[in-house]
Length: 112
Length: 111
Image 1: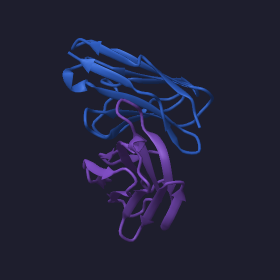
Image 2: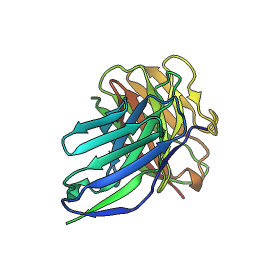
Image 3: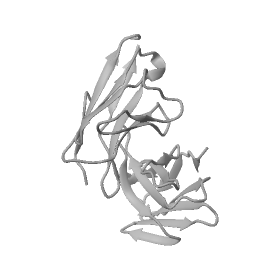
């Protein structure tokens, strides 16, 4: 059973702080990793993809991947109240399928 | 990106009835999926909607309960049959272009 684990939170940070979200996965052969943001009552939207070990930066967002530890993280710098949402980690297991396995999500609240 | 619409956006249904959810994409896509998101939970894949052939269901989901049609490369339907309150969820279709994009979802409440 391929699994993706996230700390469900809630995670609360003050405005301007760094929010750190973590995810572990069970399928060692996984090659593609994604972070989706889901506002309450809305559908998930992709914010970051990462495919190789190291860091991937896009504006205030940095995704980090460590395949040896089977660990993915998302850092949000200068957190804003508009970042308050549930963040879903998703993993594409090995096998060539486009199917994704999702974690349960971490609810982030950024306090003004 | 992909522009995806779903109908209906929400519905309240009586137990024992069925509801068909439609998913329309702005242009042709090969891969289309249906997910369920139960209250407070993450997304669970129901099935892959295959154009011109029967859908491929994940463990725990069966065609009799969730029949899926995919008549062409821009459209699919998911039917939730013989509904019970446990079927109350958000149902989302998704498509793959450069990555996976989600429709706006259908919020279903079964009384």
